[in-house]
Length: 395
Image 1 (tube, rainbow, N blue to C red):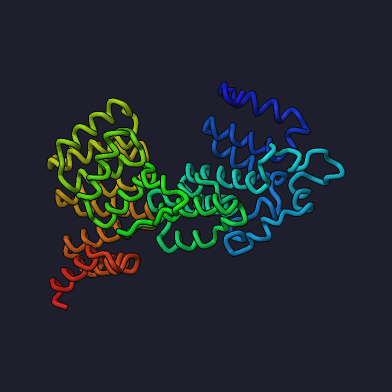
Image 2 (cartoon, rainbow, N blue to C red; image 1 turned 90 degrees about the horizontal axis):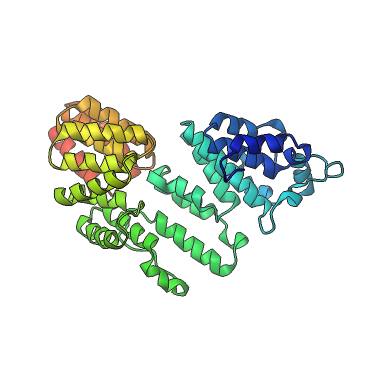
């Protein structure tokens, strides 16, 4: 029924069977059905029903983050009874309900992941990030939760490093898989660094892995080595022209290098293949910004933001399009939205400071530039703007 998209029918069948309804796995499945048919509040309400929670297993996020993970992972019989009722009275326990090879921690990781998705769709990003972290702490192989945490810099570099330290790879995986997973996560998190995460000798074939190559291109973009980034993404685009992980990097570096012709080709292809994608409209907006047609750029970027409000680069580029015409207030508004979306990045904050400086509000400019400096003290662009502001203020 689920795979034939008969979601409400599947829900009704399970809810009409008392034994199935009491199973945590089935309750999770019902929530997935509500999620699939975009009834997000119902899905969340179902997951947070009193009979679906327990003090220990379906823990509150703050206790888990505060350091009680080890207690959460030591799942006792009492915890199982708290979720499923008294085991002497009910035949369905958590363990009985699980598919072979699927652990209790993985089940609760999946539940936390789903809660994170629901809160994100309901625009509660801070709580969504907490549940993504809970999902990853419960199951280090939950890559979707990891991707959500690092995607578009939702958490700061310090928080990313702390998260990596908290993850216990060795307790969850065999030595080989533990080493592989840790490498892949570190390579993804190695931002603002020219040096590459060393590929372990056991996995030397990963040197040509697409994900590893995309991560390297992202690092080159972050440290403003645009030509090297362009060389990497161009090679990848030849063999994999619709790689959705590489395309945002490729589009950004084309804009930085002012390669308008290539931007036109890429945006035209994306509009043909993905006309309803925010990425396609973002690419077109970058093209118009590149050829100085700022009004058309704004029009396409606004459409992109309507398709995906959580895509930070759209708001940054929209701010650039307003700033290009000296529309400081609108530019600042766009940069503020970008700062809310990509909270781990200092870039939107720096541009807010730049716009205040351009409008001769030096006090606010200094405040935001200093805030950007605290987040990224080694960024030469931030240092340049602070120096320029100090010179203009004759400090």
